[in-house]
Length: 186
Image (cartoon, rainbow, N blue to C red; front, side):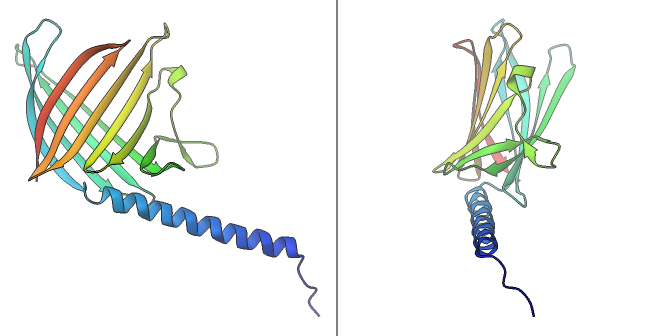
């Protein structure tokens, strides 16, 4: 004869099942929100440098769904007057948070194998995203060794044929750089 299991076990099992269902629904909600942005986009802009000169820049972004949320990968190529080109690429996955339409960056794995945020007090960026209406915004906060900060904001708004990109970088309360460009869907 099999002994009956304690009711605490049943309660834990039901609670665990409910948590799993909520997690799956939350992930599918993130994907549903992000799926409108999925695609590859390219464009270019002239960015004003510190000396006031305009520097051409090519930009591309790919937004894709992941198992738990979505990923944004982007590249920026800056062309210098002397003919040199400087390329920077980034790729960040985002997962749902307890806040509706707000997503945490999953930038590294902790000792338990879970993707977690980086630590801005160690010079790493703190990154998050949100989707409000037709705009997918990505924010990154950097804390410098002296305690100053820089916050970057990338707004990617759905537009006919692509995305309208609005970028702004603020250092210690002052706008450092702004970029505006249309990125055509490929």
